[in-house]
Length: 337
Figure 1 (cartoon, rainbow, N blue to C red):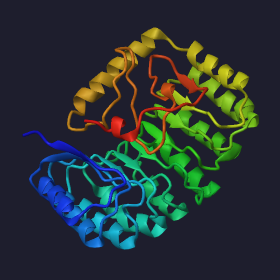
Figure 2 (figure 1 turned 120 degrees about the vertical axis):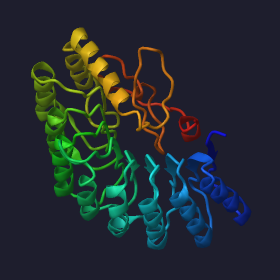
Figure 3 (figure 1 turned 180 degrees about the vertical axis):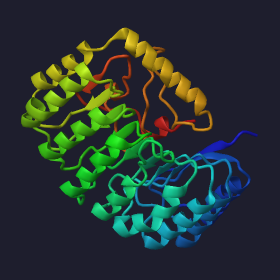
């Protein structure tokens, strides 16, 4: 029997329900486990963690919205991750981890052999935690690192912390998707990130929705760096999300025209071919489930606790700047295996 998907949202889990989950995990019968927003006793949470530790089939674990509610549960999860070898995607969005929680998790996350997608959005993180996260984005020639990272809504991180992340992103050999939405970044951090994007050879998606950007950053450093990047340097960036910022639609359209107008179809075809070759070489890594799009669309789709603008997923041969927002699919639809 092929591993199945268990998805439960916002329920109070009984001991019997937890026992069923644990038995399925230990029998390698679960590939996706989502108990987002669920309530369960500390004892039952520990049982689930032991099941995760023993599972050889689990690829995606969703504990979003407060399931990891304290340092005790954080340490139990860390113990599980130290023994698990199959997990590829971990969602902890909306968990009150604080820096102490990331310290407890760091060794298990940094040394996990398969983990490539990590959501730490709205986890009340600060600079100490971000420094540890930067260690999960190793430079070229080092061990493999994260391919998708979400740090949405962590306002406790300072400008110094974001600057450190920008340096790590610039040198990361793996990172493809970076979600920084709803952090008070402002124009100075936007300038640092623009340099990181220009330096990165892998970053395809950058979400800066609601990050306090203004026309000053778009008209000055942002526009100049992206113009120079598109005209003079090879870049992997395909999707840039700028909605809910103080950037005029005219300037957003100007950036979009600059990005789209420089595209060379031959270069894009070569890059797509290289991407397929990379996927062939990385058969042991599986991305989170993708929303099926027309044949010409090959988007990486992050699975997160927010609604996505419809054209967030648009990933044609053209670079994209998202100009409008709207309601996307629910998380349950996004995570359907």
